[in-house]
Image (cartoon, rainbow, N blue to C red; front, side, top):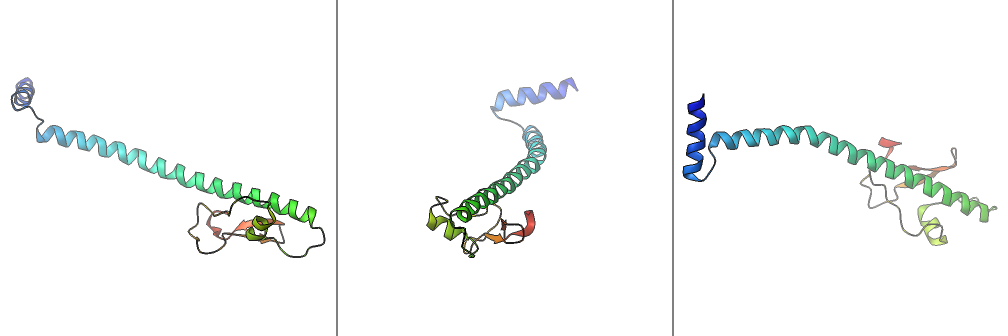
Length: 123
């Protein structure tokens, strides 16, 4: 075993490079590390997107409550565009989880008196 070790080290020193076996061992270790880290990273990203959507829902619901407080006689359900035009929110709000960039991501639910996300996967 010692002679193999010395032969590998000597070969590395003489040629100035690494052997195929050493490179394969390094790639295998990196693959194992990537396999352990990648699922955790993607899970954290997905969870943060859901929390961002929940935060958007809460913010839109509070803005709608303020809108209804000022406009007590209105029967019109609030929309994101209405809250934006009335100045209750500063920018259009998109769901970070969904891919509905061409339409409104949130709608008013009269039963619960709050906004809901159209993408029902994370409500």
